[in-house]
Image (cartoon, rainbow, N blue to C red; front, side):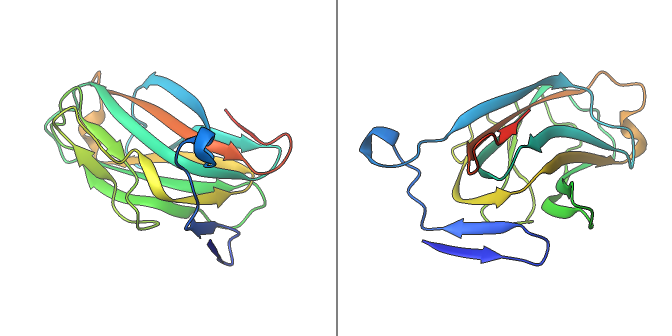
Length: 172
């Protein structure tokens, strides 16, 4: 197993045995969900998950469009906003999500900070990351760009899987 820790305190861990917990892996860990939510307004960030009480290993993330996104110029991105000050760290860069239908899935790709991965066929094989990463206390924030969401009913549900690395660490 190898660890890479950058100056912002974000660790990427490779070679970690996620697999079946009964077979010696850690499984996917705990799941926490954000009920279907309206995307934030243009240029505004919304906290979708909060990490408190210590460090966690993020093993997966899945977004699902539950009410269609309009045909407009709209991008989504995800970032980590650490509690200990400093600047936000990109978890996933902008994804064009114009006209995404209900049932479209979004997830992180295996390049830290790379573009969100999308699937429009109600099938997404990689919601669980091949290379999980550690985050300290802070918030995972969702940002949209594009004014096309104004007055729409578009909705996205988010699920996150994690393993606590410190006693008392939790994601809500």
